Image (tube, rainbow, N blue to C red; front, side, top):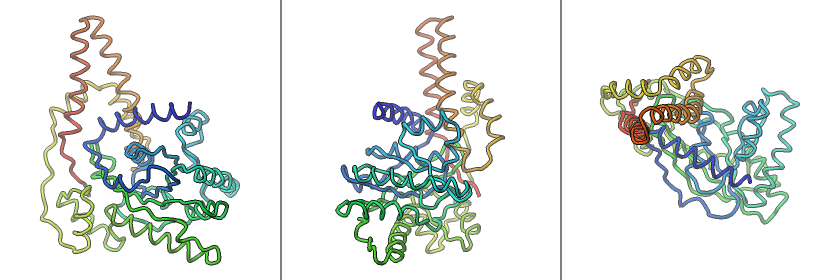
Length: 346
């Protein structure tokens, strides 16, 4: 039952992301073993949409560790559980809550023992800045705990770099770069745990800085402003990282003009979802959650309202006009998302 539900939701979300994004480019899929235990390690720029993009970009069924705050409502917790999501508690959640992590880590150990795939965001929190932050050691606890209990277990740690052209702006392009597998057992020395932790963290961090756009915190604002002014394609991570390293910035470019008429037509045809979104957007506390809420609302509201509108047109004008309206609505969305320029902002 869980597998059927997971497959259905994965297909549904994949279709939603196809209509929501300009393009999602996936590189390095061959680096993912078809079988065996995997711990995916990804940077975390864009809240809950990050695991959705990764899950729909890989063939392996993936379990996720996400912050416990999103599990507060019972029905949400139930749905997330069916999707393979597990809560991870942080100090800010309280010491009593943090103690629950032991049970979660044990669950992860069992998943790895059974050769499943788990996704973790080792930076510990989301942040829209284009930089790889220091990694927490929580993921090494999971790995070394599993290896301590199952000596011959092979676990591949696979870094994944996520880079958005313009987080929180619709539509956007996304690059998903999958790194080279790291065999966890080669770093595990129970007699020198601190060294094992630090060496593994360094390996993962190095790959993440190559797989996503990484700008050091020193002079971050100045470098980011110059890249945005040049309207670089951030999803071409290799080129952008070279520009950052060499400090050879392209000349300033004017943002491309948006398709205003097309946008107005899209809004007019989606007026009720648009109004609901505008009201909901005012209550979003962090910019990193903008894409998550907008995508989630669109995923539910657009099919619902387009379905209702199609039924009304079908009722009054017949099958043919109803079908034409529905297909035209889908084409309108695709034209806007696929053809609109993805400009950057400072």
